Length: 318
Image (cartoon, rainbow, N blue to C red; front, side, top):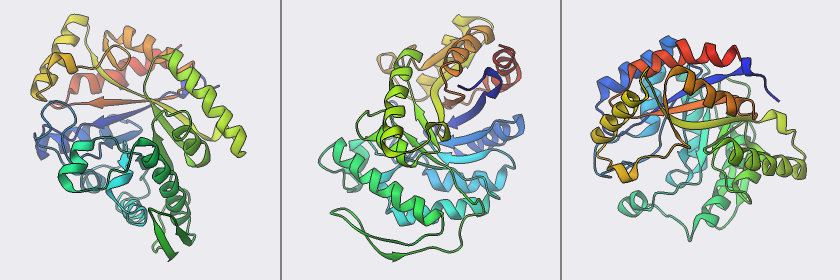
């Protein structure tokens, strides 16, 4: 099981309710502060509050950030598998890897937001189970393409005929992150293909999910230690917990999100550096060695600075 000192941190900047200059400034700050990863969503409509408020496309953001940053790894958390042909996804990720000098992460999930599919005329499938079947097929093809192989494959959803790509990514092995905790299908796909797994929940919930993942790994013959566990959250750090809640309220108002739609305590971690460190420690001790913090606009510089500057040393010290 990972030790406390192995904590890694990523920041996901919400791509909704912002214009470009603040998003660029925040990405540069994340990189300059030394975070391990920089992420954004893959949505076409806003998913918090009013769906018709401004939102940017994911891969375009990553390409721009790749030119503006130097260190942080870059990815979608997570790419919507339904939006694009898997061959196009592999080509986009390989291109991002070259633009960034070898910092791409391939994030993918089954997709869930029906409104953006209906509005854009994107096939949504008969249900979540079918979309997870599509996800499994996609990830297998993408893994082969990123590794330099050739894909010939046909299913009711996809058809590939001697598909192969050049140039290959700079990285010899582009890591794949899969998001989701579905016990029968998603976690089996994680076991087969993922280098990173992202999930949300309490330590108790994630411990049970992790046990299920280990079982799938045993079934498919995969070493579960090859999969990095990542836990997602939202976060505001202040010396006064009440002030942290006030800051979150301001962010939610900016994102046109009513109080009844705010996230609960399982995924919204607010409070002092010590309180946040204790929450993180409970997950790291549980095997989730990476924390990825989602941050809505207006982007909170104080939390960005205090998480890596104060909270991480507290966690690393045990």
